[in-house]
Amino acid sequence: MRVMAQMAMVMNLDKCIGCHTCSVTCKQAWTNRAGTEYVWFNNVETRPGLGYPRGYEDQEEWRGGWVMKNGRLQLRAGGRLKKLLTIFSNPKMPSISDYYEPWTYDYETLLNSPAQKNFPVARPYSLISGKPVNVSWSANWDDDLGGSREHAAKDVMLKGIEDKVKFEFEQTFMFYLPRICEHCLNPSCAASCPSGAIYKREEDGIVLVDQDRCRGWRMCITGCPYKKVYFNHKTGKAEKCTFCYPRIEVGIPTVCSETCVGRLRYIGLVLYDADKVLEAATTEDDTDLYESQLGVFLDPEDPQVRREAEAAGIPGDWIEAARRSPVKKLIMDYKVALPLHPEYRTMPMVWYIPPLSPVVDVIKDTGYDAEDVDNLFGAIDTLRIPVEYLANLFTAGDVAPVNTVLKKLAAMRSYMRDINLGRDPRDEIPAAVGMEGEDMYEMFRLLALARYEERYVIPTAHAEQAHSLEELATECAVSEYGGGQEIFGEGSGSTPTPIAAENLRVRREALTADSIDELPPDNPLRGRVNLLNWDGRGMPDGIFPGGGSGSGERADR
Figure 1 (spheres, helix red, strand yellow):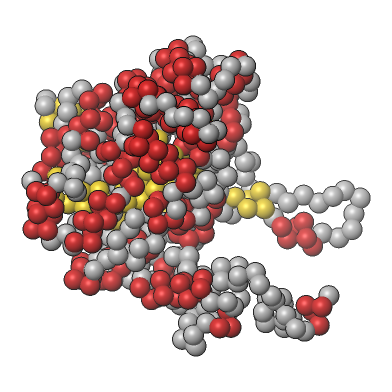
Figure 2 (figure 1 turned 30 degrees about the vertical axis):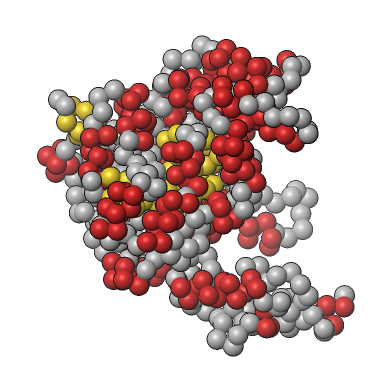
């Protein structure tokens, strides 16, 4: 047994409202720079739909992930010899049209046009080439089933049920799927990199790109089946989601999690046996990969696991965090979270609770009680379309685990309704899905009522780990390409702000102070006014151009 720690995330898809706040805040924090105009570390897809980039799940086309050949695990895109032969020309990679060509508008023409009979038009221009473009696609083109009649039929996950799905707004089902890098236990992007620039941190399992070692071969883009590695056309380097490691190291959740309107994300630590990863990834049958990955995880309540973890150098507070982890509860205890595309054999560590909403909506439309457990169970068994689609996403087509999860969610819905209405709880409801009433109540609390500190159980980095942690060993290599702009979100402005522990102190002081002027003299946010640090109370000096203030003439107007 070789115990290792992994930061992981679970998303409850029933709570996603498709507002894209997570995408926008991630964009502002990490990819608001030249060369990354088309890059979205976090994006929210409407399903059914093509996703971003278009059709990224078609591995017959893009050759991402791993496959079993002759009883061995191999990269679908080919091994070292294939990489060497195609190192200067890699055709198996989405083009900019598969992502989208980012654009802006000719606002100068619109704003400076003289008075005339016809209203001036701001034409779209490419942010990459600077030439006029005809907008035909974007990262969110099929949002809310937009264009679904023409495009959604090409969704790879509809394979086998194409004839059953009708893309009429009143007849189809729909849900939102937020996506980030999976930070896999067996990352194919790292295995694909000829330069060894992509690595998995030993301390917490976060997958990062060493900007100094990256040579821009772009094999990682082909190797990643989720297409969450991008090419910065200005720096010539690969970039990807960093799991907001500067925030994670000081116990703060990722930007996408903290700004999520629906509070659907959970972050926590999972302990796993590194010696079992290869065995799990080489499971012959795709439909067995979900259970195989569950077998890799370790129970932090087990005394032997705790001893082995301590022997491996994992700090005691990290072991305790793994014990309290909401991710561990949702994946291992309640078993309501599922991995995204386990058939890629990368062992993904961003898991999803499948949505019950498509089933509930159908029951509501028929006029029956959508909270009744018998109605819900019957609908799950008979409404094959959404269930089969979810199985193609989360369990390599195996319907049984999806059925089990949906029935647990349906049972929780019905069980808690009785309690909330003052009725006697019916113990036969949780028993029908193999749970105790107390466990079902705790699951409900975690999914619906959990506080901030319950949703995010993130242990801080230790001083003894400082030398090996990325952010304390080096500066971010891409920060020099942002025109002096900080990319981590906290220090947005002209004043540079240290990243980790110092940044946490600055943030806590700003949140607890009654006003910005009461911050300590050494706080870099003191005296600066922007939407990130203004608490909305009063009108401090500098909030309006021209020197207006809270007590001056401008504030009185």
